[in-house]
Image (cartoon, rainbow, N blue to C red; front, side, top):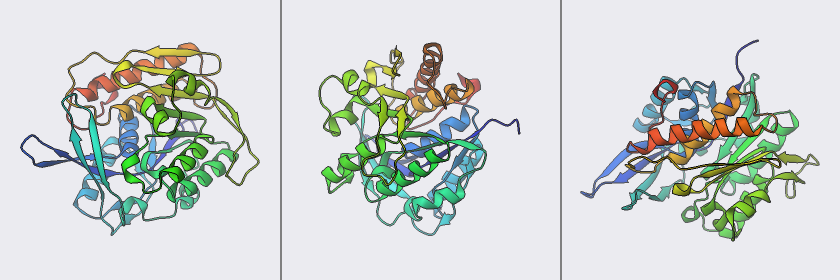
Length: 316
């Protein structure tokens, strides 16, 4: 069939309860994987979303938002409540988070069930953020390995959330193991510090490229991390391969807040690589440049709005 390959996304959908100046909590639909899936679909890609969604009022809003964007929902509806995050935004527009993640809908299934749900016309799988926390992270690592063996391109967004874990060494170990099964890896300078990889972020990001044996995972399969997307907040981003390093300055716009900015950037980056048929191989310098530019355009649109509000392609 001539339809473009489906991009499949797994991970949390949660409600960001953003603290206002008046001390009130204003809800916004969020969660990094939800934002990413929503943004990819708005940019014109075929997208499926794996995790269960709650039957509560917030879940209804998630379903409506994803369907309006054209996302195909693979998971069941869950009687458990939607995940919550209380978000405080500082004077620079940067958010900090407090999470409520126990007994929630998006964790109401076994990650390995994804293998049964995975669309036949999908050749790309993404997972990241809170899904990487143990014990879920170990299971998602096994899912990634199985999909790699079947020829699927894998993507991981590290997006470390240190306040959520009670066992930081186990969290770091799990994430560093999962990073080795990503063909395309998104990591920030803050993620690298959280992972005990200090020093120059660009040097550390370069070291993440290449072929890795899957220590800690039950496989003899080796994975080549083809692309590392290193984000530096207001200092821009780098797209790295073993042959090219391309820099993209941060958008120069009036910032309302930065909620979802990284998700929109990555969605633009992946959407453009998909358009260029460059997800399953090492992209050229020109392809990386074009992908970074679409990522920056999507981010600029989002930065000028409260919460994560990704653009449609005709809005860029």
